[in-house]
Length: 362
Image (tube, rainbow, N blue to C red):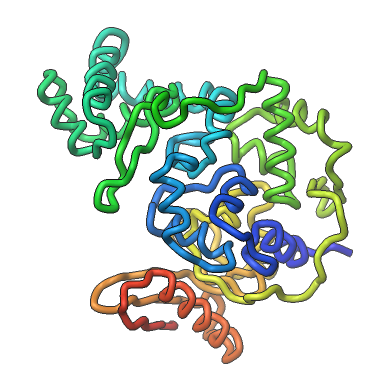
């Protein structure tokens, strides 16, 4: 009988968090289709932790050359997506996300119609004259055109323009995120009609995130269950499934991985990592014993041992890298603590700051 922990272990293997890891950052992004990237540095670890070499430069090169972009897609937040996939993925999912962003601009800042066109034109003109500009630089250009970027106006405006495929990420400037014209950074990408896109989405999600349910995909891509089922119907013969806890879980064909801990057994990840945020309906297979407090999320990171959440985690970088780990269910066992310490060492090595790291366990 398949258990919650079995599914969690299986997902870690599907997502390359345990051996066999992906060969490159490009393989990670394409395998997962999209990787949430709200916090660039921690999202970089989310990608690198799934690769054999865990090199930050791998993803950085992809972003700078434009083969991977960081942009708003799927939900109202950033994701890393391969340039070849961003066109059809935005065309499919942006219509469900766009209204909320447009409403925030209109109700909060009076930007709609001609005033929205004026602000968007100012951004596009600035980027046509000089690509790869930071948010602050674009804010200055808006002021020159009589638009004061107060509050969150600029954040919402740029997100809307990303959803409309007008702009996306540019080359980083001293490590800082920049923007560029979409057509300049993504001169060509796959074009799929709606039915083809729904089928491609279902196939890529369930092979890259599975086992997962149709409701997990509906949440992840901000689509209706009807759309998810429509896409799934086209590719179900290329997937496998099983029943668990009254739900159908879909996954890539083939035997499930061994019901033993993967290698490595421990992970320190942000709460936005795909192994957590990539699901909603069945997310808490990561907590098969029910030790994680319910209600509103307060943790910004998590410690996993054998595919289970054992503690909340916070990372602080100062004169040393400090990982604060607060156990959910009493003190960590010596073996669990040793696994978490190994995870902290891998994370600190990836940061490459030449700093000592410290693990504080509570």
